[in-house]
Image 1 (cartoon, rainbow, N blue to C red):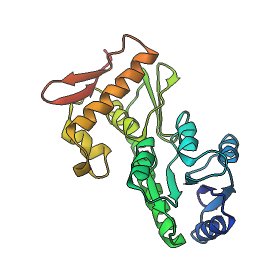
Image 2 (image 1 turned 90 degrees about the horizontal axis):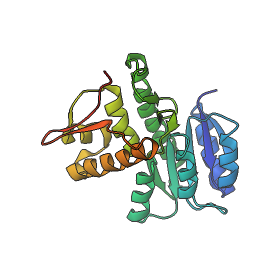
Image 3 (image 1 turned 90 degrees about the vertical axis):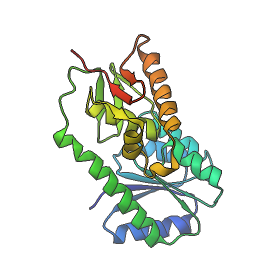
Length: 231
């Protein structure tokens, strides 16, 4: 079988259509009707991607994603009946990889699943070429999209993870804000340089919460940012 896809959807007719479409594309789908069931399933089985309904009967999909992101960065595609732009932005900022509004065709969803998995695999390709981080306080786990700092897991949003990952991959490399926007955001034109600064500030706060004297990220005034090299 192909990659395991967890479908979290309380409407059986929709779930059955999604499951069938995923199966015909070679995926191995699992189905949970509630958020709590999904969180429990994730403790027992490794999945490659989650199709997550926002309007679940027990806890909403946003809260489910918050719980998932505390430990893992599995790719997530939100499914919702709400087309409000604010909801979409909230979902993406929480770390979702895509957002589909009902009604949608199963073929459209499977195409989005393929696209997200392809991006994830491209990211994992860097594993082969990555350098030894043993001298750094960071531990990058590409498979789980997580970063440890001094042995403790960092709870990072989607863009925080991508920003810090970029810096961790090349300690000492100075990146301009424009370069970071190009590497981290799917549509850099929709972001601003101050967005990078805001995310860097939040990352620094999370690093300091683990190690108070942390100065791992260096600001190069008028230029950009780099990760401090260990000597």
